[in-house]
Length: 430
Image 1 (cartoon, rainbow, N blue to C red):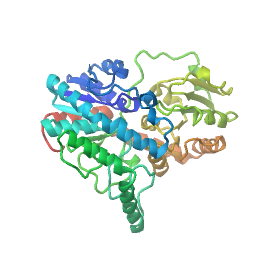
Image 2: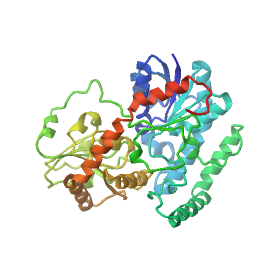
Image 3: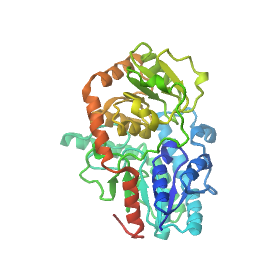
Image 4: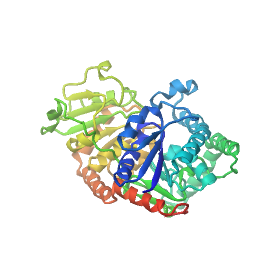
């Protein structure tokens, strides 16, 4: 038996990929503990893992960050990204390190398994105590490469020497401007923890030197000739439908001849005016059935949906996706992969956080239509949905992606790799 200590920010998109890993580790007889916020304790314990609390680190509610950080209110786009990197992630690392070292002393893990939001803290623990750690990524590959544009810009890979030069110049400019205060804060935090200065940025530090699990298939990522060998594609890591799920009375409405379009607002950026309400208006008179999910806000507080739509707060995507013909999403990585794991083509909309990168990859990989805006016009959404339903190339590419993703094994393959790492404690690669 090997001891694994998982660590995650307590947001749905951060804990989601670790849930099936925890279940599989427990099923194989390993001792599993999980350090995260109290808001998701029930989900952690449902996997069979023991819950480890925040003590020194702030116990945040990711769905209500503006209340925890009043200065965050009103910030958008790059300003919000920079604020979050400095105040939500970097500033939290010393407290996370203190908690993790206390939990390590009590639990004595063989391997740490953080998602990217906890990677910096686990890197410190590894530096001090020599405990191997494996990153479980929760979004697209973000660390730098000579073959890709700087992360966050939503640019496809360069096709010429001129475009590669452009990327290097843009990357240098971003390091001097947007990332300069982030990297200063990161190195100041390292100094407080007794660590040396590093030229690696905060994004690059998420790359574990031991093992990096990427929960997708290679065809959804840009080719990288310099991809580190410890990066291993494992296919989507998606929690199954809840064991107590029972079909609601309206379930059979979505088994008729009309295509079903699932619209999801996500669980963090839940303002229904951004995507959900424009999508309902766009599809009002279309020959489709619409299932719209708010991700949090009470459906009763929103305008009455059109006759061809049903509005719900949550539905288990793993249960509904086999009935879906197209997903309209604000670009959450998990929701997007629920669709691709079932061969469902996409309409993805977004312009904040890492959403431009997801929009670009959807277009580049051919699995759907990506729209880089935060509030699309209904007519633009309508045209995109019509395209993915009418043009076979989108469903064909989504079906091919489904087959490729399935071949990578998901949580079973991820746990195989973690077990291999656990058998060579202190190794520098896999």
